[in-house]
Length: 482
Image (tube, rainbow, N blue to C red):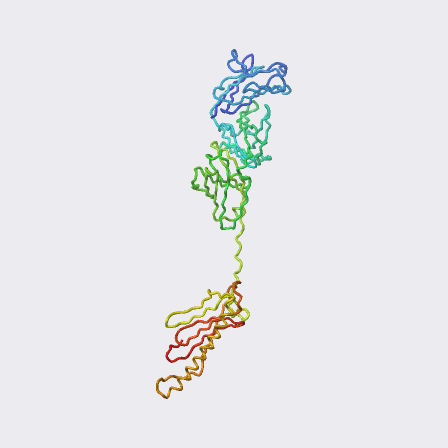
């Protein structure tokens, strides 16, 4: 709320001059009263009302020292023959006519409703931006920021006439005269920065008005001060920032710092558990968890920059809490894939712990000895012995039956074709290298399928350095061929 004071400057005897002063509610004014050096030793005072009934607001005979009286302070500088009056915490009730006592300068003070900064909260390691709005008639006046100490205010930085940021240490100011907005930026905050400050507008050598605010810097454990993230070009970056519970209801934002622009490409979210509707960065605010998350999709090298997560008060002041450094790297070409060769394995390379797959087709069905069958090492010798004995027994039996049939051919009982022996087919085994299973250690595995009477039997045995499978076929007239 802004309030204008009007002071009229008068001399006694008679009125010599009148000065109108503008102040803002919640702020303050600084008034300078000059006097003739012949009055150096006299008391100085500042009063309110008509001259005949002027009530002292402050009076002192002390020289070159600040004297306080409630919201009023007075300093008599005898060397410069001037005394300065400061009035703080203005309100509309302060509007009126005031006199500087010695040569009785009269001031008409007018208070208008306006912006009151009052308090700004920041966090250790972070930054703050203050926005100060002023009236059009003050756009060409000098502005500066000072830090109060007792009744003095030490200037930290002042504006220049150029429409650009001015930097001095950790303080930066920018006077946007077209928007009538003064922006103050303070970086690398620490708890020692917690003091009272003023934004002062110097209207003339005779008076200035100011808006005072308390800067409250807290060192909180809830939030990280800095985060580093990296991503490949074309990918996405996910940002996650905690904030204090006291700021749950405030607007959250993420902005990018680019050169002299302290908060460019800003994206904000105002509602709880709703994604931001626009902006390059999509934001989501979970106020129950005090967590602000954001996503940047399809990043490029241009996204490599310094970003800040922060909160914004209802007065527009911003507190930067967590710095986010994003680094985007170029997408690297994938390594060449290793080509697999399909060369035939040598006998030594074929030593494997899995059984070679052999299929036998018979009228009764399909019998398969699959690679999924694993023979324990202790059964291999036993199967080998039984297989060979059974093989020899069946072979001899078949030969004896062939001889009997030949001797009875003359009797005309049967027209059987004698078989002089067993017929074998050697089936070459095509191999492919398989992963080694350490649970089986046999060097080579093959399968022998023996058919005599039409009942298929599978005999599986093992022998060192064997690379093929044997299938025995009895060439009997009354059975189907393989």
